[in-house]
Length: 161
Image (tube, rainbow, N blue to C red; front, side, top):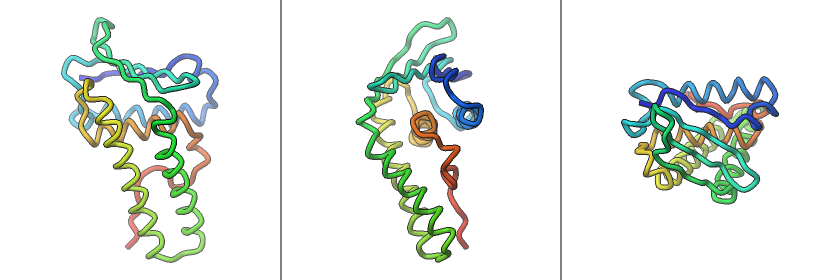
């Protein structure tokens, strides 16, 4: 059972405290027993950001490597851009009102999150993750790649009616 998610030291140390808090919240969601699904022998997920990619390494309790995945930044770039654009549009639409527009944007946000989750699920087959876990992993990767502390409405989905 996954017990820890570790972000590389350079990324962690260079981040503002507000971003680290966002990452910790996303990590807590990754570690909820019975919610996040990883292969049985997985204990630690290490995440390293490089100039070209997000590197994911799954390790057992002794620290031995179980599986690793390299997610090139350009692989997720369009989905991240689409997701952030929708979130920004949601914030503008929220200020103007319009329930049907909010509902459509919230659905678009869910669809994009699902697409990203399916992509991560396919790439991380060796991790034994399911779709909801892949969606949570996308949320964490998004927060690592984009300063989500500046995006109103990035977390969760709205109850419109």
